[in-house]
Length: 533
Image (tube, rainbow, N blue to C red; front, side, top):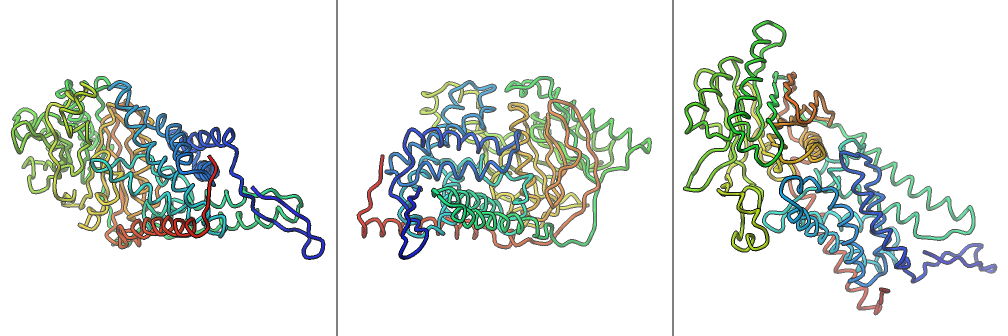
């Protein structure tokens, strides 16, 4: 906020910032509202313009506060955001895992609130720094949250709220970190325009015009970038088979034979349509994660059923399978190419590199059991793979990632660096709901733009669909239904600026966040800055 004074001898209008923070009884509901605004920006709501509003709300609430108060306000924003965003995690496991995960994620926004409070002297002295400072702080917070603990949990990144936004084009330039930074910069621009009181019309228009120009530049660049990557124009026909499960829930594993049969039967029906001439023969069929939880390499009957489907359709099938080993009591979550006539191609097998902690493996099991007996549902720990998901299907080289791996920048980028021409996300949403599935599809849309690749998501129960290199979705399926989608997709083998830059945009922006925090420390020591509660 500011005070306005008339100085008749020098200038008609003097604008001087005050030292006051937003009163705490106002800051608390503003912080909560910021979390709600962030939530509504994400699928299934999709009100993406609210993401910068949420960023601005937290920045306003935390400005000029003590670190503890800033952290508390950030935590309120985090709870209001993450608890409903992650509500799908409690559908079949009870409330405790959902509560613990939500509180953990909210803790990172508490750190962000404290950092925002700490940087108050910098943005007060140089008001123009508020947008970039806000941008780098959000990127730094997400970089930390994406990696800690146990490999991090990148769900709810600002970038993943922009799947239908003109800002999505920034992913082509610098990936998800740059999109997050741009969204947060937009929030900082809103704060610059708000953090004053203006007593004359002349005083209003200048900051409003500046904010409007800044926002238009961000949107304009996002719309102007040439999404896509170079290719030879070659295309392939791909079929997604969404076989569905008899019933949703954690016991889908007890329905293993039925789930496998569903995918075989749907593929055989597709083959009949191909034979009748109703549908052209696909070059590749993609089944989702957990489409065969019976190890088809060890169970002859399961392998025979998959071979029946591949032989009938006359195309290789990328099968999502649970494979036993390599050690006793260990399993692997894998995508394996099953060829017609010859069966499994063990040279084209991808093992999930980032199993989900406490869902696919249990770290610190004895301690975790003391918190919740639910961990014993995970009887065998999934073993992580060590190589990127580059699968050569003959007609096309696939970049395969499994389920939550699509949220991790490096796991997707490694497949493109390895020669992937088409991005594939195999997932199982049978233990969640349609909100989770749509949030995941938003990530696929960003990855397609980021790497200039056509992409697809194949789910057991939905939502499945194809995504073009500019982020548009085609043939999206319904939730908890059986469906088959077939589409011709154009392949790409070039590299976007984001692919070439790799992790460096995130490193640079997070480094600037650290530098800003250090500069604020120096300024505070020199001026003896104090904050309010």
